[in-house]
Length: 243
Image (cartoon, rainbow, N blue to C red):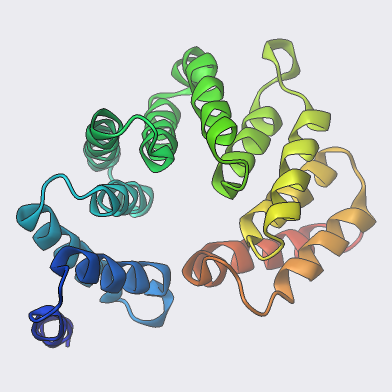
């Protein structure tokens, strides 16, 4: 089925004016809807690989190519595989940054991959990276105040850091709330805001955010919602049911 899907896609784009644009459109659909089929992620990977071969400097393809490596790193079981995938994602994003320093996808996913590498190596490496990550995420928002992933990244950064090294739940809430003002359907923002409320022992606000998130009819990232955010929200609701 996966091979058939890829073949049909390649036939469909054969006569397109911009083949790599079409490849990216199809790959993006498969990636953001990978909850619909277990083969969608690999099919998206194959399409983007072809796009890279066709036009190595295609910026949207580079963005998606970096992002899909981060995703594969997230689901990899072996630490060594995670490292390889995150490092590849960072290198791809670095290429995008070099091609166009004003392409915020390059800066964003370079920082995401860089942060994942630090997390995989351990707490001390993550702390060492914090100034670089803050600078990168803030640079993204300076150029594009609607880039919701950057709001979430800063919110999580301030949430996860110990207070002694800059953690701040007030700042975390601020960034997550700002992101939701831009896109209330970005469910990860609402899930992470609920986690801030858990730390503050604000149980009703936690439940409110989780229930609003679960009722989202058109999540911005459908696959993330179905595969990650929804299960985590349900688990969190169960944990605080007696609070």
